[in-house]
Amino acid sequence: QTLTGLGRIKIAPSGGTPPYTININGREVDSTFDELEAGTYPVTVTDSQGCTKTRTVTVNDQRAPTIKVNKTPVSCHDGADGVIRLRLDSLFYRSRNFTIQWQDGTTGTERQGLSAGSYAFRYQDQKGIMVRDTVSLTDPRPVRYRRQTSSAGAAEDCRVNISITGGTKPY
Image 1 (spheres, rainbow, N blue to C red):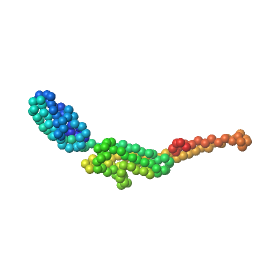
Image 2 (spheres, one colour):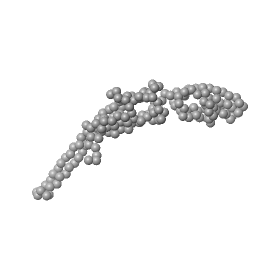
Image 3 (cartoon, one colour):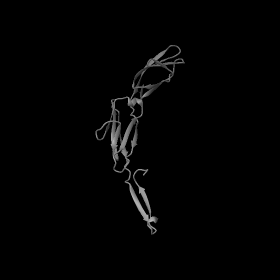
Image 4 (tube, rainbow, N blue to C red):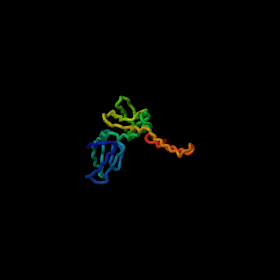
């Protein structure tokens, strides 16, 4: 039997005389063995009469990781202070040998000093699993203001109203 994915072998014995003893990779379990890395595991089922059956179960590691994106947008129009951080979904993937390469040839899980735009990256690990994605940073609208003055005749009665739009609040 071959299971695709990381992590679990579940055995449901039948035949023979219950109750059963299940031994996976030299360890007795109820019916499930979790937190497995990819590999081949011997599974032995023994019934109450001492009859045994041994099979080999292979857990293939073919899952691609989920890559979580944390981004800080550019703070000012035409600025270059955006940040992209990539985080892999589990310790298993973080502990593997992997490379994240960006479209401009740089590598790593974090980019800083970015302007607005799209940034493509490729994750690839030592097993050949590959994930491609693109992260976009937005550019805030330029700050604009509108001034409106009114006067009732005397200088001390003058009012100025300013309306601000665009940019990144607070102003």
